[in-house]
Length: 63
Image 1: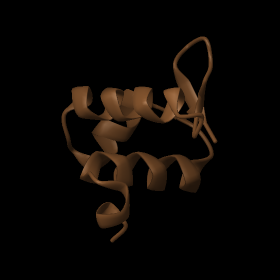
Image 2 (image 1 turned 135 degrees about the vertical axis):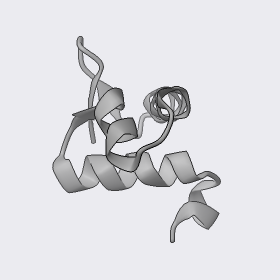
Image 3 (image 1 turned 180 degrees about the vertical axis):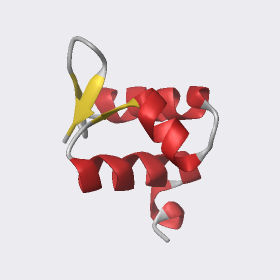
Image 4 (image 1 turned 90 degrees about the vertical axis):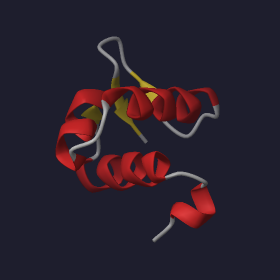
C-alpha cells in the first residue's frame, strides 16, 4: 500500500496502527500485525527522531 512511499513494511504498519487508534505501544503494534518487536521499535525511534511521532514517558506514541 504505502510501503513504497515509506520505504519499509514496518513504517507502514506503525503509521496505519497509530493513525487508526490515535496512540499505542510498540508491543501492541507488533502483536497486532504478528511481527517481531525490534523492527517496530526501530521504526518508532526513527519517527520520533524525525518529529513524526512523539513518545510519552511510558513509550506511548501519538501523532
